[in-house]
Length: 50
Image (cartoon, rainbow, N blue to C red):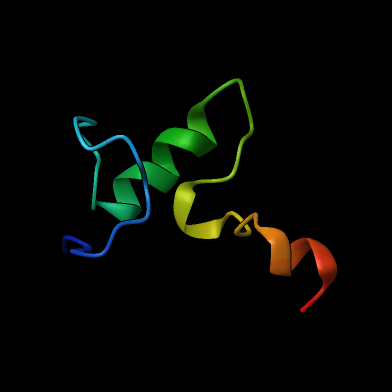
């Protein structure tokens, strides 16, 4: 199933909008970084705790 509102900024990625494939790819990666869907949004209000 494709996520039409994928928050990933890499539109050309072959896994863009395919959350399950993306999570598997990141789990198998040496660099353990969270996928775009699971990252906390950074911004003024989140930094202030609002």
